[in-house]
Image 1 (tube, one colour):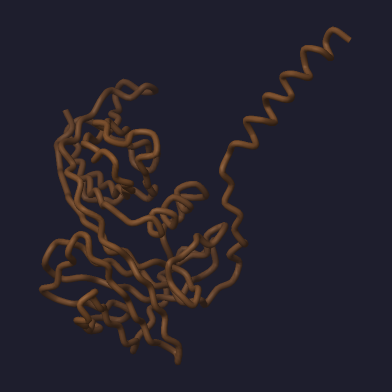
Image 2: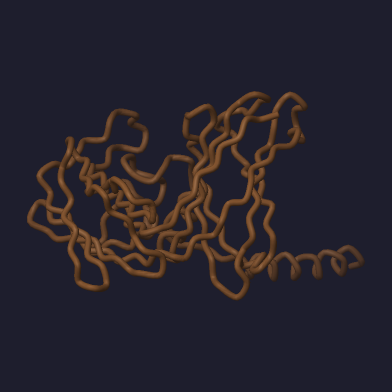
Length: 263
């Protein structure tokens, strides 16, 4: 009876903690041959790239089949339309184009007799101040990467971080929000196991400021796997901002890139 008195409160605490966790219930993505749209519009004037492919089995590592002959255009809030041109199989570009922070953009993709639409709002830019490294907690020869930035107070912010080691992109996905550090100066450790980091390596960090639907997309992928944004079927298809529902995303975001040599 004494042991029962000890275990029963502990069980109640465990149940209470479990009930506080946010769970995203997703259907398994076990189908193939589905359209994948990867659309990015940034605030940096230049070439904006959209990629159209079809997905393949999760265990298949081959090249994703491109989708050709699509018609793609972007439209801003003023009604201006920006057509994209297919420059190579499955790659569609618009040159000398830049999004404006605070504005929303609509993507229209017409392919195989269907029109796919998505809307994304480009948030204000947040400056990536610096990148530092420290000795790894598990191996003194390796380094851990830390990014530093000031989160704006009183504004909901979401971030995606893309990391490169010696020009090779890390496969892991990083997506963060400011639920627990709104208005604070953030020191964020980029924890990844894809590529070891050593002194004299070149680290490049791209920090994107993204809207809530795009954050939900990347955060879901970060939670479930390291398989990447599209192409192969992930264990669960992440929620998309594209309708009718297909794989992929459309992201209008600000971006900044900073590089350092590891000491």
